Picture 1 (tube, rainbow, N blue to C red):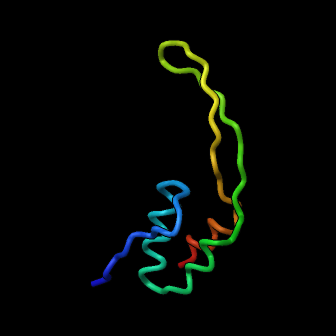
Picture 2 (cartoon, rainbow, N blue to C red; picture 1 turned 135 degrees about the vertical axis):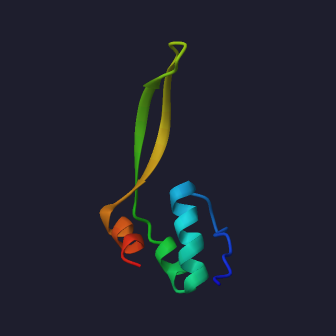
Picture 3 (tube, rainbow, N blue to C red; picture 1 turned 90 degrees about the vertical axis):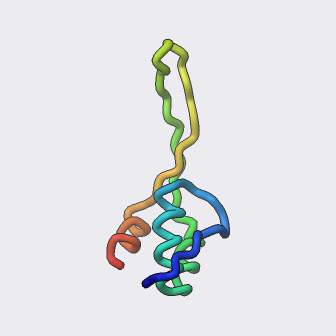
Length: 72
C-alpha cells in the first residue's frame, strides 16, 4: 500500500496538488517537476446567477506538464 503524503510545498490548484501528492509519494524525484514554471495565466470573465460580472485569474498548465503527469 502506498503511503500518500500531501504535496505541501506550495498550492496551485486541486488538480496540481492532488497529482503531485501521488507522484511525490511514489518517487521524490517528481518534486523537481513540480517546480517547472510551466504555468500559463488567463483572466476568466463570467456572470453569476444573479447577474454580477466576475473576473478572476486562472492558472493552467502547458501540454508538457500535463503529459508528464499523464505518462506516469
